[in-house]
Length: 148
Image (cartoon, rainbow, N blue to C red; front, side):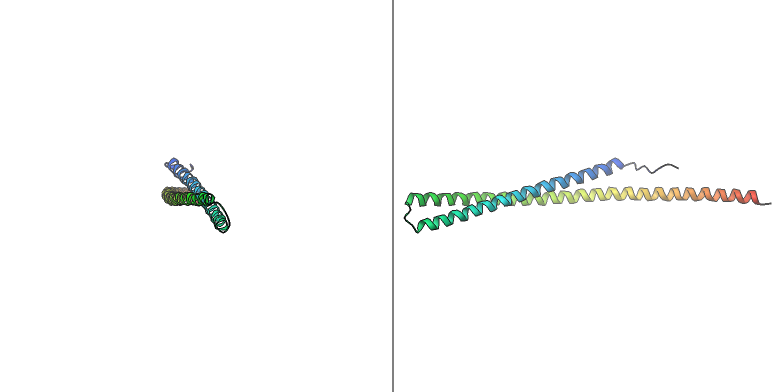
């Protein structure tokens, strides 16, 4: 009585590896998104701090050149924030793409695993039938030997 051997086991293994790789790629995309969001948060905090300084400076005797320089820096931060928002948006789209890819890989793996499970059930049924046939044969031989 031999053991079960699935002819397409390498494909099942490959699908499992592809799923694992897709999980890693999704994780990396989520990490990148979190980094972009954190960077955006820091830029916004810095902008708010500079706005507060600018408002504070405008109420005191600060040279106009210094006020203009501060305003230019706030404008620069606004540009950085706009670019960072685009980066965050792209990172979100990348997370969505990786999540979709992972979902596809998981479905592929499930299909092949189900195929393997079905083949195993057929193998077990065949083995059980074979064993039952052998037991029936032994019972028939015993009956024939004990019959007068």
